Length: 274
Image (spheres, rainbow, N blue to C red):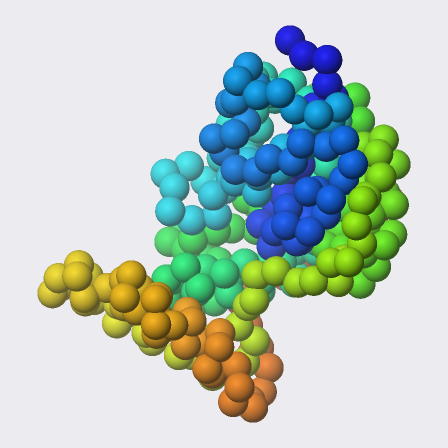
């Protein structure tokens, strides 16, 4: 179908995906960098450079707001993407589940969620489960479906971006054209107990306003966002200036879950050398 190399980047949520999409992939020489679900279908309507690198964290599934479980969404979306896009190489970004859950929960609050951490991870009526999130089985599955797989850890992306760049350059067979933004950050999160408490309360109020009164009372409406007064913006910008203790997020994981999470990361380090 094409004379160019196709590389797919599957970013598990909260693993440095946005950073790579904004500051790294677009700076690679001879690379056409695209992102999102829709551009992946434009193979026949585009004229990419020597390398087409497509990145989309949505390929890993939707952690919430979807009829499918997070695990089911991963396999179904990747199967579809592989069949149509047919990449010769895949990049995957990962991180230990202990820190991943906390970061994902904060993103859930940023997007309007209001459940407590223990409710969020409840096996029966929660948003997500540990079994849905294990990364090692998914990486093994991927490694059997593509000739070359590069696994990058979020920790290395954050603490040693130059090493990350070298690995990406070698894997893609190209070089980066600019390093001026290597230390930039993306996706500001909430950190303090005050920020999390405020977001949970405001989002719960917002849910009640939407359901019981009228959708126009949405605290995340266009006017609120324009003036920086949505709950997320208040928590991230105004409350971040107030000194406070770092939030301790207790998901109430069972001993079995904790063992599975630790084993998952140890297996990734051993098998994929992250």
